Length: 379
Length: 249
Ligand SMILES: Nc1ncnc2c1ncn2[C@@H]1O[C@H](COP(=O)(O)OP(=O)(O)OP(=O)(O)O)[C@@H](O)[C@H]1O
Ligand SMILES: [Mg+2]
Image 1: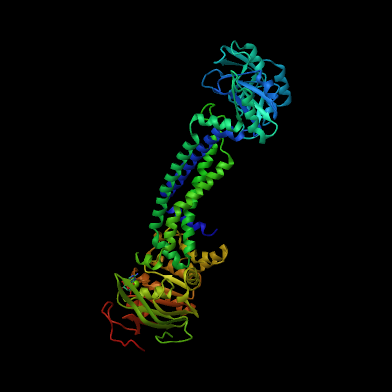
Image 2: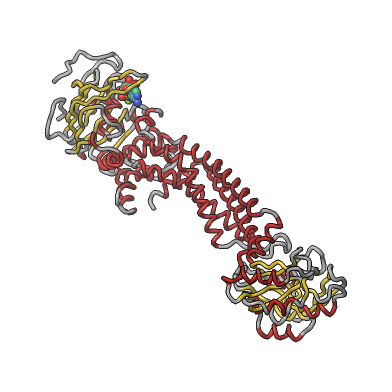
């Protein structure tokens, strides 16, 4: 594009100002990238939720258990296909700050319930053979440098003592949003060693035969156990995950507000820079029009300048944010999925261009409406 | 031949041109019933006291402003009916402007400044380069292509401006006090260039000047008085008010 040289020369006229404008975009988009990654992290449970899965927990609270006998009774409810369960272990490795989730899982049904997780067949067989075996997610294995065959001790803060496990398998996710920080071990091992709460499990996961029937199946489960000492609350995995996010606070709104403030500030800063850039060049713009540049092309020249700043800064900021997220979760385990998705990056770029247009449009319109004769007379 | 009456064959024909500005609720009649015909290849100088409307006339001739009444025809095109983008395209095609203050873009090199009008054409990059080099060669600045305006003398800047005005081979050149800001020697160089363009290359040049020595270079000198033109090669000192020449020829 032959006009690009013209736009480029104008940007280089005030190098410091251009650098600051580009820098504002870069900083704003870097922030946006981090916010988007945090938002994805909080919502990953909602985003990866299986449409055919229900989570059944104790009606009083998630930390209250349910009897293991419920499994057989749920399987009798029409529309229920598979039932599995898990219990929160709440241990840590070496240091209490090293957070990652550990579940005691029902070994026969767990993996069937989660087809998005992949474990090599041989490794899973080995896990089924070893009462003290465990399977860990790729991210956690890499984090602690664990390899298959390692024996790892976990301090059990809920159940007491130090528990040792043999790593029999490492699982991967099939999508980048999948959480690969979990640690699964056998619930029969937990049952054997636990000194209290025997015969209880943390929560159930139910697969329904028809996702369209999920709501009515959930209702049927809850009414089945109504008026028992352990009443249940069944809901879709998505609703469950969303409720979990809400417990942390209205993260969504917080992120939207911060993001909005960042972009609004960016608009003010860059809009002002563009207005200055145009005001000091009135005569030059008039000369271009004299030469035969149309009002529309002058508009595009000015808009091109703000868009060029926006694009450079935006790409820079998003790239930096992407690099940052590639280094992984900065919180030491609380954001199991810390990831800037291509869709969020595209949205960021679109926002950048929108701010680029918005900040340039008023100066560009002024430049377009500039009357040659008056502008030249002012010189 | 320049005439102040109608001539159907002339390149530029101006008929009964009126320009009125409104200022503070009052009408200022700058041009009143101005007539002019200029043939191709002529070099015309306009003189007249400050505020007599010389710049206003050039702006109208160059399609930078629209008259209140009257018509301007250039090479058969009636430009007073054109508007917006059409007028811009017409300017790009037909007019080369040269200003007193050179009006080069400070962020562009001499080469890039001269190239500007060609960006509006369909010429390829290589063709544009050839045209720019020819134009800069013509004004004697081939060795200054990569200089920025601030690195050039006033005379050199004005020669770059001339190169920019002629590079797209316009129908005519409009110069508003092109030597007003130059010393004698630089002014002479610029004037020699302009008259050469008219005599050797057949360019039509219309120039406003306050300088009688500059006006001498032109074939015809016209005086703007009371909003109309009067012919004459001599004139009293500038700003002395209207001369006693009759307004009609
Ligand atoms: N936009 C405008 N609004 C009102 N009056 C104007 C406008 N432009 C020009 N005028 C008036 O028109 C008259 C002619 O102005 P013009 O610039 O054409 O004079 P000039 O002959 O070029 O003068 P100079 O020799 O000083 O350049 C002046 O009185 C000026 O004040
Ligand atoms: Mg003037």
